[in-house]
Length: 243
Image (cartoon, rainbow, N blue to C red; front, side, top):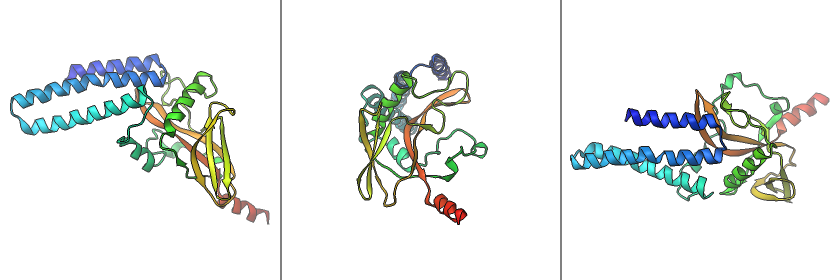
């Protein structure tokens, strides 16, 4: 088992050293995960022959979980589809944006202009992340989104507070807006709806998440979007200071 883990860790470091496209590296990780899964299945079979039912139950649960995530990753990375039973979407929906942030929050200072910003909730379409990943990969290839070299420094592949370059907020009626993104301004697609009675004062649409490296190990976090606007609290303080 130790030898197997050493082999997997070596392959993981090799793929990280190549620094290939996240799309293809995640496909490689998905295929790589089949190795420990088959090994666990072998253990389960041996426990069944020996009638060791307690350990059989525990290893069986591990095997089922591994198969579950292999299937999810296969549909997501090879077929660009989300499975309805994808439990990871619940984490993305309910956990805060900084839940997986690997940086020390005490050392983070808000950039100029962000101290007066607030995040505005967006009712995103169910499959918007698939479109987002596709667009980001193309924009990275065309060098419209800059990335850091994860083989030389730790952190997120796309730096924090990176502006999504092509987006538009379209007003539908007095309290409803459509959020649209694209690979350029000619081909914008609606990915969500914003409900806001007050006039919108956008600061920008920012990319959150993606691949990151911590302690020499490369991880993956789903890409998300964060829509920031000027807060009413900040505006009221400005008005009071002018009086």
